[in-house]
Amino acid sequence: MRPRLLDRLLASEDHPVRAYATRVAGKWGTRLAKPLARLRQRAGDEYQRVRLEAAVAATYVPQAESVEVVMQVWAGERDRFLDYAIGTSARALQPYWDHALRDGKLDFAGHTERADFLRKLRGTPPKRASEGEQLYNMACMACHQPEGKGLPGVYPPLAGSEWVSGDPERLVKVILHGLTGPITVAGQKYGTGNAVPMPAMGGLSDHQIAAVLSYIRKEFGQEAAAVSAEAVKKIRTGTAGRDKPWTADELR
Image (cartoon, rainbow, N blue to C red; front, side, top):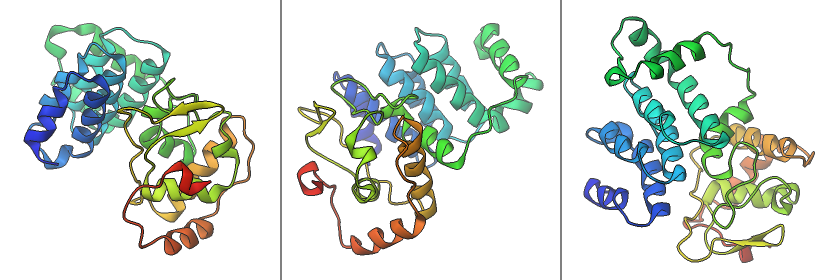
């Protein structure tokens, strides 16, 4: 994506567009000039959805100053989903900000309460997460939320979803190539209008895809069977010529 186009999307009047552009700004952070300046703009967005994306996107920029974006989000209005994203993002960035905070190199423009939050976080042992949970938190949680409930009318839930508990081949295909267009989950329609499509994540290894899918199939009240890396490899090989996202109709 071109930086000028990205900047226009970040300034869009449509907040779902700003949210998606913020995510891209993070994932492209190491290729962009001054990525944190872009994320800081959206860390103060009026919509919590956009601010959540800014907090998560900051984790893709591996430097101490990235936590300043996370703490800017923390300083605004929050709900439990945003609190979860803030805590997870701050933890992910701790190897970069820990020493900087100790050495007084992060002052948060005089907002001492932000530094206090990080000191408290540093003193609290993190919960040990499985590989599948870690991947979910990094790649899926921003849209599907900590409890897998999604966002009404925008991002479909994983909890209680027949797509999650059903044939795992469909899930593997969606992860590999993405999903676009309308989809009905638990009787509710998603993906209509200007909804953001699910991006492909084929860059994940077979093992990683198996881990995250096994996690969501068990975690959100499904207790569905795990997915093996061998099954993912077979599906990846069988769909290697695919160059566009799937639609729900194709996967039925």
